[in-house]
Amino acid sequence: MLQVFVDDSGRGENQENPVFLLAGYAGRVRNWEAAADALQRIMRKSPKLEYLKGKEAASLTGNFAGWRAEQRDSKLREMIAVLKKYRMIAVSFGVSYKDFNRFFAEAHGINKTPYAIIFCHMVVWMLMSAFKKPSRESIELIFDQGVIGRERHIQNAYEGLMGFIPSEMTGLLVGRPRFEDDRKVLPLQMADLLAWHSRRDYYEQTASRGTRRWGAKVWDELRKIQGKALFLRTPELINLNADLAKSARLTLCRKHQSMWPVVSGRELNSSSLL
Image 1 (cartoon, one colour):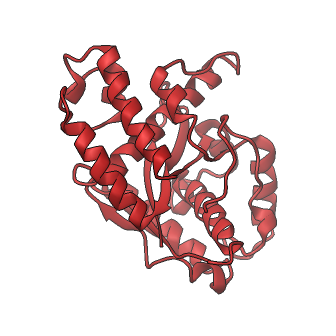
Image 2: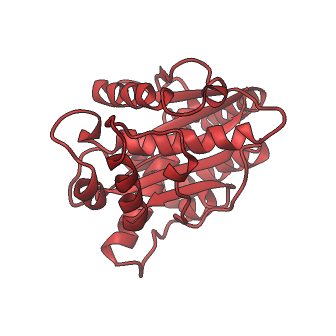
Protein backbone atom coordinates (compact mmCIF):
# COMPACT_ATOMS: atom_id res chain seq x y z
CA MET A 1 0.00 0.00 0.00
CA LEU A 2 1.09 3.54 -0.78
CA GLN A 3 0.67 6.29 1.76
CA VAL A 4 0.55 9.90 0.60
CA PHE A 5 1.19 12.60 3.19
CA VAL A 6 -0.04 16.03 2.07
CA ASP A 7 -0.09 19.58 3.42
CA ASP A 8 -1.28 22.86 1.96
CA SER A 9 0.34 26.27 1.67
CA GLY A 10 -1.12 29.63 0.75
CA ARG A 11 -4.44 29.47 2.58
CA GLY A 12 -6.07 32.87 2.35
CA GLU A 13 -5.17 35.07 -0.59
CA ASN A 14 -2.99 38.11 0.13
CA GLN A 15 0.07 39.84 -1.29
CA GLU A 16 2.35 37.17 0.18
CA ASN A 17 0.07 34.31 -0.89
CA PRO A 18 -0.81 34.69 -4.59
CA VAL A 19 -0.71 30.91 -5.00
CA PHE A 20 -2.49 27.97 -3.36
CA LEU A 21 -1.05 24.48 -3.52
CA LEU A 22 -1.06 21.00 -2.05
CA ALA A 23 2.24 19.18 -1.76
CA GLY A 24 3.73 16.16 -0.08
CA TYR A 25 5.25 12.75 -0.55
CA ALA A 26 4.10 9.28 -1.57
CA GLY A 27 5.77 6.04 -0.55
CA ARG A 28 5.14 2.46 0.47
CA VAL A 29 4.12 1.83 4.07
CA ARG A 30 7.25 -0.15 4.93
CA ASN A 31 9.42 2.63 3.53
CA TRP A 32 7.60 5.26 5.55
CA GLU A 33 8.06 3.24 8.73
CA ALA A 34 11.81 3.09 8.21
CA ALA A 35 12.00 6.71 7.06
CA ALA A 36 10.07 8.00 10.08
CA ASP A 37 12.51 6.25 12.43
CA ALA A 38 15.48 7.72 10.58
CA LEU A 39 13.96 11.21 10.58
CA GLN A 40 13.34 10.99 14.32
CA ARG A 41 16.96 10.07 14.99
CA ILE A 42 18.16 13.05 12.96
CA MET A 43 15.85 15.45 14.76
CA ARG A 44 17.15 14.24 18.13
CA LYS A 45 20.76 14.96 17.19
CA SER A 46 22.28 18.24 18.35
CA PRO A 47 21.04 20.83 17.69
CA LYS A 48 17.80 19.07 18.63
CA LEU A 49 14.70 19.90 16.62
CA GLU A 50 11.36 19.40 18.35
CA TYR A 51 9.07 20.22 15.44
CA LEU A 52 9.61 21.09 11.79
CA LYS A 53 7.70 23.90 10.07
CA GLY A 54 8.80 25.18 6.68
CA LYS A 55 8.11 28.82 7.49
CA GLU A 56 10.05 28.66 10.76
CA ALA A 57 12.95 26.94 9.05
CA ALA A 58 13.18 29.61 6.36
CA SER A 59 13.01 32.50 8.83
CA LEU A 60 15.00 30.84 11.67
CA THR A 61 12.15 31.47 14.10
CA GLY A 62 10.05 29.26 16.39
CA ASN A 63 11.78 25.91 16.81
CA PHE A 64 14.70 27.23 14.74
CA ALA A 65 15.22 30.34 16.86
CA GLY A 66 18.90 30.74 17.73
CA TRP A 67 20.05 28.41 14.96
CA ARG A 68 22.62 29.45 12.37
CA ALA A 69 21.66 29.06 8.73
CA GLU A 70 24.43 26.47 8.32
CA GLN A 71 22.97 24.36 11.14
CA ARG A 72 19.50 24.48 9.62
CA ASP A 73 20.72 23.61 6.15
CA SER A 74 22.79 20.69 7.44
CA LYS A 75 19.92 19.27 9.49
CA LEU A 76 17.36 19.54 6.70
CA ARG A 77 19.75 18.26 4.06
CA GLU A 78 20.19 15.11 6.14
CA MET A 79 16.43 14.72 6.55
CA ILE A 80 15.78 15.22 2.84
CA ALA A 81 18.39 12.56 2.09
CA VAL A 82 16.23 10.09 4.03
CA LEU A 83 13.35 10.69 1.61
CA LYS A 84 15.67 10.02 -1.31
CA LYS A 85 17.02 6.85 0.30
CA TYR A 86 13.55 5.40 0.75
CA ARG A 87 12.40 6.41 -2.74
CA MET A 88 9.68 8.84 -1.76
CA ILE A 89 7.93 10.63 -4.62
CA ALA A 90 7.26 14.36 -4.32
CA VAL A 91 3.91 15.75 -5.49
CA SER A 92 3.03 19.42 -5.87
CA PHE A 93 -0.19 20.75 -7.45
CA GLY A 94 -1.09 24.44 -7.47
CA VAL A 95 -2.97 27.34 -8.99
CA SER A 96 -2.80 31.12 -8.69
CA TYR A 97 -5.65 32.81 -6.84
CA LYS A 98 -5.87 35.30 -9.69
CA ASP A 99 -6.65 32.60 -12.25
CA PHE A 100 -8.85 30.59 -9.89
CA ASN A 101 -10.93 33.67 -9.02
CA ARG A 102 -11.27 34.53 -12.68
CA PHE A 103 -12.59 31.15 -13.79
CA PHE A 104 -14.03 29.28 -10.82
CA ALA A 105 -14.49 31.24 -7.59
CA GLU A 106 -18.01 31.34 -6.16
CA ALA A 107 -19.38 32.97 -3.03
CA HIS A 108 -20.47 29.63 -1.59
CA GLY A 109 -19.99 25.91 -2.10
CA ILE A 110 -17.17 23.75 -3.32
CA ASN A 111 -15.74 26.47 -5.57
CA LYS A 112 -15.31 29.01 -2.80
CA THR A 113 -11.64 28.03 -2.45
CA PRO A 114 -9.10 26.28 -4.72
CA TYR A 115 -8.98 23.20 -2.47
CA ALA A 116 -11.31 21.06 -4.58
CA ILE A 117 -9.79 21.70 -7.98
CA ILE A 118 -6.27 21.04 -6.71
CA PHE A 119 -7.27 18.03 -4.61
CA CYS A 120 -9.00 16.46 -7.61
CA HIS A 121 -6.04 16.94 -9.92
CA MET A 122 -3.64 15.48 -7.36
CA VAL A 123 -5.78 12.43 -6.58
CA VAL A 124 -6.64 11.70 -10.22
CA TRP A 125 -2.97 11.80 -11.18
CA MET A 126 -2.05 9.42 -8.37
CA LEU A 127 -4.88 7.02 -9.23
CA MET A 128 -4.01 7.02 -12.92
CA SER A 129 -0.35 6.44 -12.15
CA ALA A 130 -1.08 3.54 -9.80
CA PHE A 131 -3.78 2.10 -12.10
CA LYS A 132 -1.32 1.72 -14.96
CA LYS A 133 0.95 -0.52 -12.88
CA PRO A 134 0.33 -4.30 -12.84
CA SER A 135 0.44 -4.31 -9.03
CA ARG A 136 -2.26 -1.62 -8.72
CA GLU A 137 -1.35 -0.84 -5.13
CA SER A 138 -3.94 0.82 -2.93
CA ILE A 139 -3.48 4.44 -1.86
CA GLU A 140 -4.13 6.07 1.50
CA LEU A 141 -4.39 9.87 1.68
CA ILE A 142 -3.23 11.52 4.90
CA PHE A 143 -3.59 15.24 5.61
CA ASP A 144 -2.66 17.54 8.47
CA GLN A 145 -5.52 18.00 10.90
CA GLY A 146 -6.48 20.96 13.07
CA VAL A 147 -8.06 23.35 10.58
CA ILE A 148 -11.81 22.68 10.41
CA GLY A 149 -12.25 24.55 7.13
CA ARG A 150 -9.44 22.59 5.51
CA GLU A 151 -10.91 19.24 6.51
CA ARG A 152 -14.34 20.25 5.25
CA HIS A 153 -12.96 21.38 1.89
CA ILE A 154 -11.04 18.13 1.42
CA GLN A 155 -13.99 15.94 2.38
CA ASN A 156 -16.28 17.84 0.00
CA ALA A 157 -13.75 17.50 -2.81
CA TYR A 158 -13.44 13.77 -2.10
CA GLU A 159 -17.21 13.28 -2.29
CA GLY A 160 -17.40 15.20 -5.56
CA LEU A 161 -14.58 13.16 -7.05
CA MET A 162 -15.89 9.71 -6.17
CA GLY A 163 -18.94 9.86 -8.40
CA PHE A 164 -17.15 10.95 -11.54
CA ILE A 165 -14.24 8.62 -12.11
CA PRO A 166 -14.39 4.86 -12.80
CA SER A 167 -15.04 2.64 -9.79
CA GLU A 168 -12.08 0.44 -10.68
CA MET A 169 -9.88 3.48 -10.04
CA THR A 170 -11.64 4.80 -6.94
CA GLY A 171 -11.41 1.28 -5.55
CA LEU A 172 -7.68 1.84 -5.13
CA LEU A 173 -8.31 4.45 -2.43
CA VAL A 174 -8.24 3.21 1.15
CA GLY A 175 -11.35 4.82 2.62
CA ARG A 176 -11.77 8.55 2.96
CA PRO A 177 -8.86 10.98 3.47
CA ARG A 178 -7.41 10.64 6.96
CA PHE A 179 -6.36 13.55 9.16
CA GLU A 180 -3.48 13.34 11.62
CA ASP A 181 -1.63 15.69 13.98
CA ASP A 182 1.53 16.81 12.19
CA ARG A 183 3.29 17.28 15.54
CA LYS A 184 3.13 13.49 15.92
CA VAL A 185 3.60 12.46 12.28
CA LEU A 186 7.00 13.32 10.81
CA PRO A 187 6.01 12.64 7.16
CA LEU A 188 3.46 15.46 7.48
CA GLN A 189 6.19 17.78 8.73
CA MET A 190 8.24 16.93 5.65
CA ALA A 191 5.16 17.61 3.51
CA ASP A 192 4.89 21.03 5.17
CA LEU A 193 8.53 21.74 4.33
CA LEU A 194 7.92 20.95 0.65
CA ALA A 195 4.61 22.83 0.50
CA TRP A 196 6.05 26.02 2.00
CA HIS A 197 9.10 26.09 -0.26
CA SER A 198 7.05 25.20 -3.35
CA ARG A 199 4.64 28.06 -2.69
CA ARG A 200 7.51 30.45 -2.00
CA ASP A 201 9.12 29.54 -5.32
CA TYR A 202 5.87 30.19 -7.17
CA TYR A 203 5.58 33.51 -5.32
CA GLU A 204 9.04 34.54 -6.48
CA GLN A 205 8.24 33.56 -10.06
CA THR A 206 4.92 35.42 -9.99
CA ALA A 207 6.33 38.58 -8.41
CA SER A 208 9.22 38.71 -10.87
CA ARG A 209 7.18 37.64 -13.91
CA GLY A 210 9.28 34.54 -14.30
CA THR A 211 12.73 36.09 -13.95
CA ARG A 212 13.47 34.96 -10.38
CA ARG A 213 13.34 31.70 -8.44
CA TRP A 214 13.37 31.04 -4.70
CA GLY A 215 17.03 30.93 -3.79
CA ALA A 216 17.53 28.67 -0.77
CA LYS A 217 19.85 25.72 -0.23
CA VAL A 218 17.03 23.69 1.28
CA TRP A 219 14.87 24.31 -1.78
CA ASP A 220 17.74 23.22 -4.03
CA GLU A 221 17.83 19.91 -2.17
CA LEU A 222 14.05 19.46 -2.22
CA ARG A 223 13.99 19.91 -5.98
CA LYS A 224 16.31 16.92 -6.42
CA ILE A 225 13.63 14.49 -5.25
CA GLN A 226 11.80 12.85 -8.12
CA GLY A 227 8.10 13.49 -8.47
CA LYS A 228 5.29 15.33 -10.19
CA ALA A 229 4.63 19.07 -10.21
CA LEU A 230 1.56 20.54 -11.89
CA PHE A 231 0.67 24.22 -11.92
CA LEU A 232 -2.67 25.01 -13.55
CA ARG A 233 -2.33 28.00 -15.84
CA THR A 234 -4.85 30.03 -17.82
CA PRO A 235 -5.10 27.75 -20.92
CA GLU A 236 -5.74 24.65 -18.82
CA LEU A 237 -8.28 26.45 -16.65
CA ILE A 238 -10.11 27.75 -19.72
CA ASN A 239 -10.40 24.21 -21.10
CA LEU A 240 -11.46 22.84 -17.74
CA ASN A 241 -14.09 25.53 -17.32
CA ALA A 242 -15.47 24.85 -20.80
CA ASP A 243 -15.76 21.13 -20.05
CA LEU A 244 -17.49 21.79 -16.76
CA ALA A 245 -19.98 24.11 -18.45
CA LYS A 246 -21.15 21.15 -20.52
CA SER A 247 -21.96 19.13 -17.44
CA ALA A 248 -25.47 19.17 -16.05
CA ARG A 249 -24.04 18.84 -12.57
CA LEU A 250 -21.75 21.45 -11.08
CA THR A 251 -18.72 19.50 -9.92
CA LEU A 252 -14.99 19.72 -10.31
CA CYS A 253 -14.45 16.12 -11.33
CA ARG A 254 -15.60 14.05 -14.29
CA LYS A 255 -14.84 10.63 -15.66
CA HIS A 256 -13.02 11.73 -18.80
CA GLN A 257 -9.26 11.87 -18.72
CA SER A 258 -9.27 14.98 -20.95
CA MET A 259 -10.46 16.93 -17.92
CA TRP A 260 -7.02 16.60 -16.36
CA PRO A 261 -4.38 18.36 -18.50
CA VAL A 262 -0.76 17.74 -17.64
CA VAL A 263 1.44 20.82 -17.91
CA SER A 264 4.86 21.71 -16.59
CA GLY A 265 5.09 23.30 -13.19
CA ARG A 266 8.25 24.01 -11.28
CA GLU A 267 11.27 21.97 -12.32
CA LEU A 268 10.91 18.54 -10.81
CA ASN A 269 12.09 15.24 -12.19
CA SER A 270 9.40 13.09 -13.74
CA SER A 271 8.66 9.74 -12.13
CA SER A 272 5.81 7.33 -11.68
CA LEU A 273 4.52 6.55 -8.22
CA LEU A 274 6.21 3.20 -8.37
